[in-house]
Length: 175
Image (tube, rainbow, N blue to C red; front, side, top):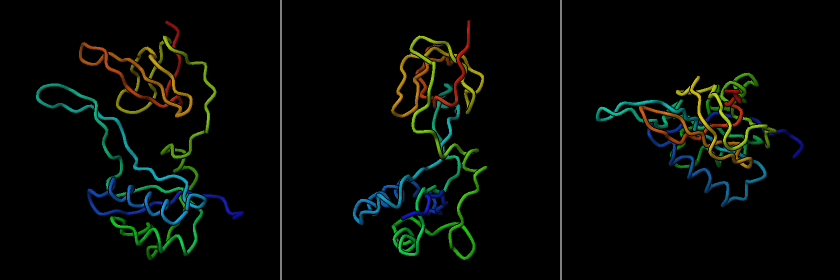
């Protein structure tokens, strides 16, 4: 198909985001839709929570009951997606999908470059620029250029804790 894939928003049953994602992944695989549905994302954020007097870093759903899907839309896809267990429909007028505007895609960081050219290496000091740890300085312990993520050791509550951070959410600092 000559159409370009766009991001759409799906509504799920409350608490069924992970189940709906897994079910949709099975539908894609079973029906050979890999060339039409490219990515399924549950938006997550890192949050510091206090449990039993200790603060821990946890991942929380940024937008509960929603999935983001990058696909080439068509009526045949609509029926397969909406018929997937756990998905209640697309967001948009009368349940018909509207693609996300470009500024929302950028703001939610849904489209990331395939490879990020970086000068960050193991042992570098970096500042985290996004999320719950925004402004935190840490030391790089590993770099994964395939997934564009970096494991950063940060001091949380008196001890070193590894945190996975996207390459585009880091800035190298000179100490």
